[in-house]
Image (cartoon, rainbow over the protein chains, first blue to last red):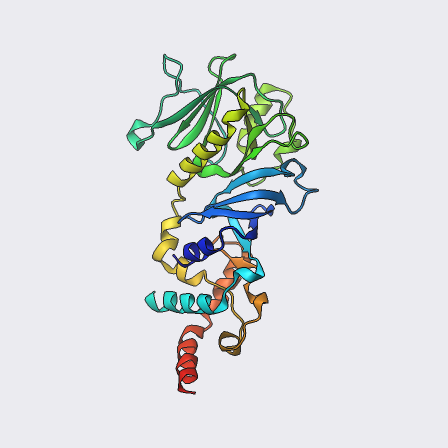
Length: 93
Length: 226
């Protein structure tokens, strides 16, 4: 559940979600659930030339299983907390 | 069963779709005066949209026996689109898992028969409601149903190797673990899915060969000893 807990911390921050079909969407993280389904607000498509019809959707639901990467804001990464969390996760197994 | 959009014809006498009761499928909501536009095709004449716990079914009003269905498992993304530049009418935009060799959009949809054979390659569907004010509640219904349909493989990732191995990318050297971490190692970040594509498998290899967790504890102990 590390990712779930971690992404919950990022709610309200600006992230970029890259899908396995190469579509990359930038927006404010509205919510995330245990399956890592992601809801974004005020979204925009990074590669607008390739996906002109997705120019501006206000909110967007992305299925967790199609996400390839989530690009985080730099200030959204608290290294110390992340350190502890990953160690705990590794020990707990 | 092949993924993606399918033709749907299993309609009961009262004009509602026959659901898979045995699998516990239930009707969640119904939107009348709903039209769908598949891929780059023009919107169909209005029909009725049935949202069930498992899938979205659209039945044509004008053409009896015509209908489409797509499982929530195959809907990868949905969004409310209101920008007239993106699409002439406000709609719920969906992306659908399509067959691999999909070059749908450019396909020739002139003939009905050809159009049908192209169905599994449709990767986009727009749902247009007569009452555009209902789009937000339709969006919420889609969100709710998507959450009811997690991927069958998702549970394996939950506590199995997938979850533990699909972790964060760290630097090769242990130094990075203890001292200030180069933030670059956190961007981009895999999301814990084993898609089987080249990148995530190389991430897995990296971590399997990497004894960093034991090292980390030692380092930690040494650190405390200071």
